[in-house]
Image (cartoon, rainbow, N blue to C red):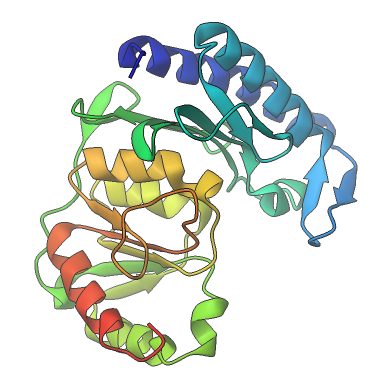
Length: 261
């Protein structure tokens, strides 16, 4: 790897701050909504924020490729690769709900090295890099030590696919046996997990750009972050099982034993 991770993290934080200025501008003045072929919304805020991010990252780390939500892949996926979602939660953004964020991660040959998750209107920025812990506003964060499902708090996000097979019943069992169920969604439940306020997050319908940075943050906070089959996150990841170690292991066992799981 030909990269100083400290400098790369600084660049990612700078890029996220540049995007935040753009997102706050459009949040305050409003923005027209267009619709992509996959029936998801996109706005000028998404596009301008990604251009600003790319300008910072390409200058700071010119040897790295960039894969972004709005402008696709520039360069090769094989080496250093920035993963960028300039406005994760566009549906929330256009409905005036502050559950949206900028997600920036750096991957090297499939390994996630660092991540920044910035939610400018919600008022939270988390960041992490390999071996250096996870941080929120200058303070190191850690997942909870919860070991029993009966004391665990769960959160679910996008679970449409999960409703279509037998894993739905397994999820129901986890909910019945837990202490509390919530549905924070987007960046929010991963931030809560990383700082010890939640114990498990389940999603069945995501994109790697949505969760790459969050995977690093949860991992560096002491949590476990996989897909629903227990695999490490990668470019093809479409689901998430993230949690404190004991609860993640229990949930994975229950989901793994279900047909179609």
